Amino acid sequence: MSILRVEDLETCYDKSPIFQNLNLDIQEGKITTIIGPNGCGKSTLLKTIGRILKQTNGKVYLQEKDLATIHTKEIAKHLALLPQHPTAPGQLKVEELISYGRYPHRKNVNKLTKQDQELINWAMDITNVSDFKNRQIANLSGGQRQKVWLAMALAQETDILLLDEPTTFLDMSHQLEVLQIVEELNVEKHCTVVMVLHDINHAARFSDEIIAMKQGKLINVGKPTEIITPETLKTVFEIEARVMVDPYTGAPVCFSYDSLSSKKPTLDMYVTN
Image 1 (spheres, rainbow, N blue to C red):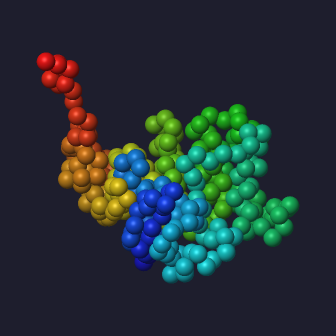
Image 2: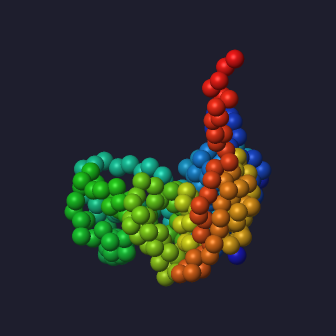
Image 3: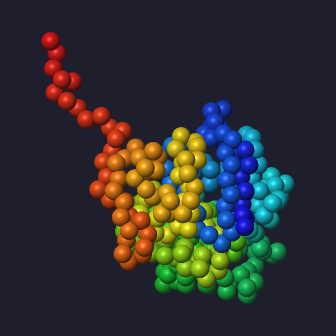
């Protein structure tokens, strides 16, 4: 059953459409990952679904209700968005920032309830940030900071989590840690996750469904085994890819690929008559 539905969607930057007539269903309780080359509209789609950007045409439905007709605070009870480059005052302490995730549920803005504090503690525990909850944001590493932002989104206690490149600028260990937290949340809390990833193999391993985009169009939507194929990767990324099955996870793995989009220089290009 779809929990989010996009119908004839169009979003523009400076009156230029990033995508047009886009139709999509996001399945409830699944991890759906959007992949595609830079500038294809992945982040724009996620921001439009999260109502950070306003569409110029079409509709986004949350559980069959037009998102445009729902109050922002009510949406925030169902949908949390972690943007690509979140910012916060550096002097804020970790626990204080995470507590902001409780805002949509708070009746008294100046006071946290016992339930609020329990959810904040849970979010810090599941993301492994409790040990430095009293440190300032400015004094954290990139990996620590990303986990804190994820904890804030989890403290929001929503049915849907939108993540825009949550592993960007993280080392391999922190990338896996963040994605394993997302996977655990999906399994244990049945949270619907929609995320943008650049790493094809991470998308294949951690997703139930993959959306492949190119130049503002949906090229293909399906299970990882249906999307991570030499043919689709050639169409979407303009690469020659070899795909095998990971014996540990059973997911397809893309390896040893060559770019088709870069024209290699030849001697003739530098020789003049």
